[in-house]
Length: 219
Image (tube, rainbow, N blue to C red; front, top):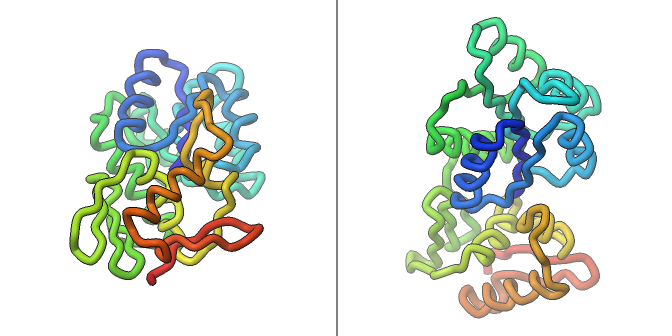
């Protein structure tokens, strides 16, 4: 899952980015509103963590532009603006949640996961496809009740596929979900991860739809 972090404070941004990456997310970090606006035009993000007091374009203005364009990406405001009227304004402008600085990083990550579940229409913290079950919070996978050891990249690829079981994702779409800015991506990196996943989960668990992409199967 790929997140855009919009934060101009270098210390906060670095800490939040590290925490989200450690939790298994691909994270791009924009330090001003204009940079974030350009990044959001790509439409590759699953969620935005948004500060309000930003240079070049204020967070509320960025949110208004985002919702005015019909972009439904979940937005979690993380701001020091603690007045009730500010929180109400943020939520009414289209934010999905609002957390006050200073915040606990574990709570922020829990809120991120909750928003992603809500956006996907799931009340469960687990992702399941037949007897294959992922726990994104604990970064664990089980098949037929037995633990399956996955690397961080393998887990990220499988999580992207299991967010929408049966849906077909192209190699490019999987790269966008798994890798952030500045990360080197080999031309066959996704195929290598999929090969390892098939070896661990069984050859029929991830299907190749020729010329289109890949999907996860209950078989």
